[in-house]
Image 1 (cartoon, rainbow, N blue to C red):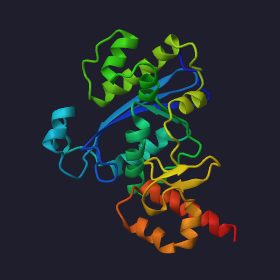
Image 2 (image 1 turned 135 degrees about the horizontal axis):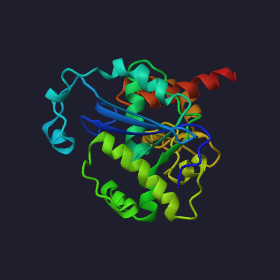
Image 3 (image 1 turned 120 degrees about the vertical axis):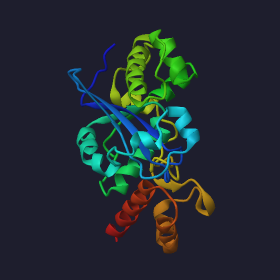
Image 4 (image 1 turned 135 degrees about the vertical axis):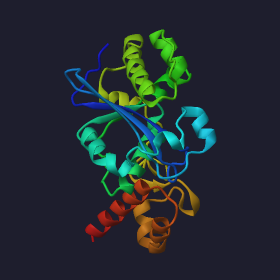
Length: 256
């Protein structure tokens, strides 16, 4: 079943130096852009991360320092990536918890604004786990009856994720072929900041999910304890978390 799209959607996958969203870097990115008329564009880049790739990480995806030493940096690729993603929804495998937050960090690090307010994000892994609870390789075998020979290659994983989602729509009649519905179905607890330091309460207000202010409205904390905002801005929090807190602070000031 082909996807019922109202605007383009970009399936993407990252290979990275590790799993720390704030500190690790992209070493390979693959983007498959699917348009409402089902035309597709596919791009894959190796990326020089500017930091060493640990041997244990190379053992997973096969990309070493030597493989990327002459490749462009992310800051060189960022304008092209931004152009590809502009006006499109996003989809990936475990993307809501890892790929999207890490991509946001890389984009903001290059001082390119990355805002997901109008973006629907479908996490194919979440749909899979809610239905079958397996890995991407098992999902590909289960839904598409194919072996994922190049697992942990960004391009192979990206294309496999696209095929799995289409097959999920064929298999499960209760899944709606609608980007907004699929994004909501594949979401975990709704985070305000991607990384989960800020979540929404039942009234749709941003609240802290950690520390001494856990459960408290962010705008109240920022107003009553201004130093907390400064501490977060100077600490090792994701850039997107800092961006959302800045937005909340400015929004509160605008109402005074």
